[in-house]
Structure formats: C-alpha cells, structure tokens
Amino acid sequence: MDNTLEHKEVFPVEAQDMMNYIYRSFIGNQQISYVLKFEGRLDPNLLNEAIQITVGLQPILACRFVEDPVRPYWEKAEMAVSAEFRLGSLEESLDEAVASYIVEKNDFESGPAMRAALFRGSSDVLCIKIFHACCDAAGFKEYLLLLSEVYSQLNVGSKAEFSCPYTGERSQQRLFDAVGIVDYQTILNPKDMPEPTWGVPSQPGSNEFPHVSMRRLDKELFIELRNISKQKAVTINDLLVTAFYRGLFKVVDYDKEEETKEISLTVNLRRYLEDNVMDPVSNLSGMAYIAILPQEHEPFDQTLEKVVVALGHAKSDLFGIQPALGMEMLSTYGFNASYQWLQQQSMTAIESKKATPCITNFGMLSANTIYFGDQEVVDAYMIPPIIYSPHFALGANTYNNQLTLSVGYHQSSNNQETVNRFLDEVVASLTDWIESSIKYS
Image (cartoon, rainbow, N blue to C red):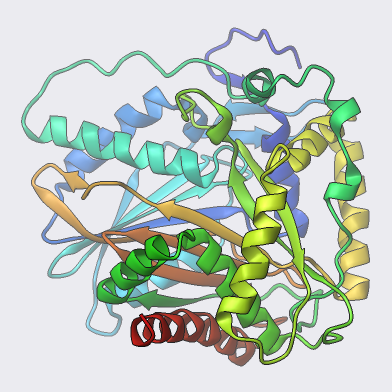
C-alpha cells in the first residue's frame, strides 16, 4: 500500500505497529489499560463528546488493522469509539468490575483501536483500553492528558475548535534521523538481543482464564524510596529492576552462580527526540537487555550494584534502539514473512519453556494531579498487556506517589501462587531495603 495515500480514512501501518499486531498472536493480548478513579462523578455526555473530539484529533484510535500479505494498513472502523456506561451492583465492587473489564476479550481486529467504560458507584472509575498495535504506553499517557484537557474545556462551556488532527511522523524515521542512523542494517547487531536462558515456571500452550495480579506500594513508602534513592545516587528504575531480579530469583529454578541471567526492559525511545514527544499517538518503544550473575542469599545492595553497572553499560550505546532496528528490518519483508518468522520464534520458546523476563516501567503517569473539569483523579494506574507463557512481564508505574506493580497472565498456563510469590518478593525487597537504609543511615 502506498505511503502517500491521501484518503483521510486510511493510514499507513508502521514497522512497530505491524510487529505489535503480530505479537498479539504469540506474546500477549497487546492491550494496555489505563484506570482512573475520581473523587466524584463525570458527566457521561461530556466524556463521550471529549472522546469524539480527541479521536478526531488522533484518528488512528478509531481505526482497525487491515491485514495484507505485504503491506497492511489502518482503516477507520465501522464501530465508533465511545465510553460504555456501567452501573455498579451490590454483588460486585467497582474494583472487581474494572478488573473483569480489563480481562474481557476485545475484537481489536474489527476495531476500533480504543475502548472505554465509565463505572459508576458512589464515585466514578474510568477505564480506557488501547490496542498496542497503534500506540505504546508513552503515547497513551499523552492521549489521556489530551482527553482530560478537552473534557475540562467542554466542562466550562468552551467552544474552542478542536478540528485539526495531529499530523506528523508516526514512523521510526524521526528517531533514526535524531540519532544519525542512515543505514540501520549496518548498525543492527543481533548479539545485543540474547537468546533466553531461563523462564518463569509455566505450562505454555493454553491461554485461558486471563488474570491480572497487582500490588501497590503506599505513598509514604514510595516517598521514602524516592528520597533514599536520591541520597544513594540511584534511580527508581534501578531499584525496580533490582527488585524484579530478586523476585525472579525467588520463583525461577536456575543454575545458581553458574551463568549470568538476562532480563529485558522497555525503553521509551522518545528520549532521543529533542522535544521528547510525537504529536500523533504512535509506537516508539525499544528494548534493552542486561545480564547479571545471581548469587544465592546476596543482600539487596549487592544485586543493586550489579544492576547499576549493567544498566550503565547498556546505556553507553544507543540504549534500547537495537530491537527497533530489528522491527524496521523485519517489516521490509512484509506481513506474511514477519508473521511466519515470529511464529517460529514462538514455537521455539514454547518448546524450551524459556523466554527472557521483561520489566516495563511506565514511570509517572502524570507529573501533576489530573483533572477532568472539577473532578480530581485521586488514583490511577496502568496495566500492561496480558502475556502468554512462557513469556513473563512486570508492569510498574506511579501516580501521586503511589507505585503500582502488576503481572498479566493466564491461569491455565501460569500458577497464580507463583505469580503472587513473585510480586510479594518484589514488594518485600523494596520495603526491606527502605527499612534497612533508614536503620543504618
């Protein structure tokens, strides 16, 4: 399909779009969920009006992915984007209703790429789900802020026009230009994407009974964590990666002290852009890999030191860009060829029961408290895709100094007790480190 298409209802599929669409068959459901809890209630009519306006500004969200053997494309879906209105019931709490909504199967193939539901009890909870094929978490965060801005303007009766869609580059070319990559094939280094050597215990092959297990770190503890991290010149991400490793050491059976163990972590590649944003929502994420040598019973600070060194080495050379280059190259072979290659990779992972564990740190959802008109968002969190085993991923994000950790998985292939033990160890590692740091400060 020609990239110069001028028809307003059709848009080109970029390299990361196509790969994330294919991953829906082999890696996870590729749905990113954003949950916002309000102090009071929203106006459902204003919310739907704001959604219509913002989808007009970001038209890719109203589209469906159309498969083509060589070059797929985005086409406006027949079904419009709107927020379902769901009243709470005595039998089910709002949290339970939202949790059920998150794991509901979505027909993203028919479109549109965004779904929303407003849950009403004594106060409101808004849940928005986006298909990762059109947008990553960083783009999702920007969209949510746009939605809150438009709702707020409508709430005060502003008649400001929002008629001009966001235009600009959705491809990775802007990234490659920013870092001076002219011929990505000469820079692509498969050795930067290691073969998996371990995996979280699972029984791959059956993806039924989707579930999300979640843990929260209270505001007071997170503030302590942040303050101590500054004193020790480490980042929150360093600490999360360290706790992630220690959680894995708790539940994965591996050859202790015999070989390094790798993990992957997602990277927002907008870090390389001058303004750190891309106006049209898009996928611009990469992946970095680090490996450390595990030692049984080592203290948190010892693991942390290894992680900091490994991350420092990874950041020294185009941090996170190698997988983006790989996606770009693979996409040149067309949809069918890319699908077949990823299918073979998936079969290998299932047979070996090994897949590099991944941590996705979405960071702060917003630097400031979010408002929809006069309604304050008192709590918010983002849930990454629900993964197919043997793949495994931890999602992390903060809002108003509260940390949310989550794992999406299928109970038919992953043991819930194992996932819960992992999450409990992650939280315990962080809280114990806080207490130890305070005690010996």
